[in-house]
Length: 306
Image 1: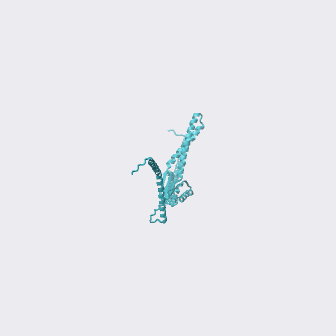
Image 2: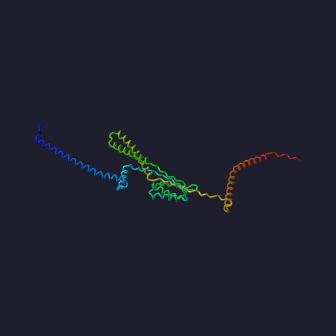
Image 3: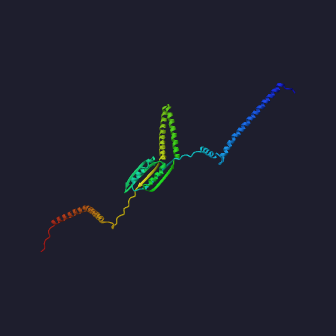
């Protein structure tokens, strides 16, 4: 075997020593990192265990955090849009006074009166009022209306228009985008043909957009304010007829006078009906009488017999 030089052997020893030192340093670093990870992991595990145990310290504060996280990740419930309508029918003694009181209920709660119709027929007074009030005050106002008379009927309805509102809003947004796009094309149009075509399409889209926006405003008003229709009426008073025993001297005189007037009227009618017939009969009778007298004058006298 060939012996290595002394310098080479020394270099090998130095390299080995350096490698050994590097390995020792690396091992110490690994142990420190593992110890630190374990130390960090213990508090995390303890916190998780205390959150899992209801009776552990800090469990009360950890539970709300967990529930709050679940609430944040879950989808919130969609707010529903409801159109509320109600109709109430009442009988009351004084229709006008009750109608004025009902109309005064709308303004204090932020509502308005959309209709007030009053009529009279056959000793009966009627009124129909249409109130627009906030939905959260509808039941309270109905209770106040009931106190003004005797309720005969009531109906309260709620219509869910959430999908309808979303559909109208989406259509309005799409039409607005189309109108803006057509306006942009119109400003960069070069030929007359394309200009006329774009103007026609823009006019049609703008008309559809205005109609959709009007529907959107009307639906929003129906959602914001509930509709309450109140019908008022008075029942006709029943007056029992008077019997002959209950009639006094004044009633008897009035009845006799009515009978006399009625008989005079019938007599006048009979005379009026008989006048033409009487005139014709007199003319015919006069003519026959005149002819008979003339015949008597021209006839020869009969001889007398002795």
